[in-house]
Image (cartoon, rainbow, N blue to C red):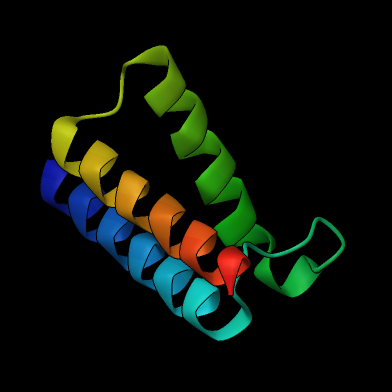
Length: 74
């Protein structure tokens, strides 16, 4: 079961990365088509801020945040 969760987390991470690479930001609340990515992002940011996200996921979330920041600067 943990493996399925890990695979699911990685799949959502890849979707988020692809979205940020294309759009240079996370989806807007009004973009219902990509609400799953935004909800995943918000949930994992909350877990990170609470200190309950595992280290591997935390590192990936930080990298994703950096991708957004880099695109915002250009």
